[in-house]
Image (tube, rainbow, N blue to C red; front, side, top):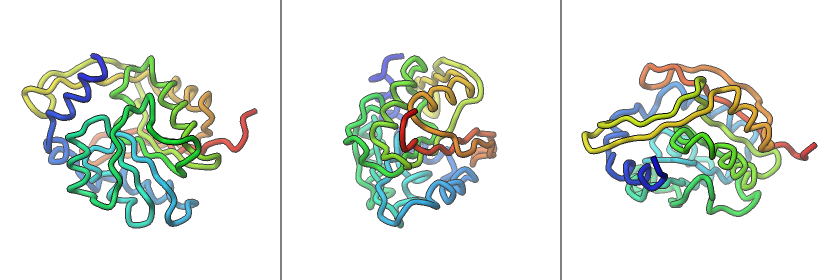
Length: 206
């Protein structure tokens, strides 16, 4: 499934995703650990933000949040739900953000919408834009998988997912320049177990 098809699918999803997923699931409690060493006013890039209710909304009171999404329709919803966030349309394989210009990155339920053959490119982009010592929190698929589902949330939506599995993802993060602070399972707002990793951008490459 090519990338523009994913963008069009998210445009078609509309408000259905916001109605589907709890905005205050247990996974959002992990933002406190992510934010702990960051100074107030730090710049956070929320990658694949959607309407922002599950991510940007939990960070925008303390930080400057850039909400980035491939879908213009989802960014319109971000502007309605979290007006203090700055909307940025872009592709996570080519982030429209300057080098070392953000202090933290959130990537919840987003990277697996990119073909797994491009995940290293995504993590390299995260490392490029994140300052040394900055933080990354993301959901990680434990198992390798790739495929599409017709009728996801709406009858006219075909959605794509792709992941290489946990061990491959951890290796890719390391190659990009991130150290894993911790990785743990949490039951999310849908009652599903999700694996979340908190990482830190290395100060110096070895």
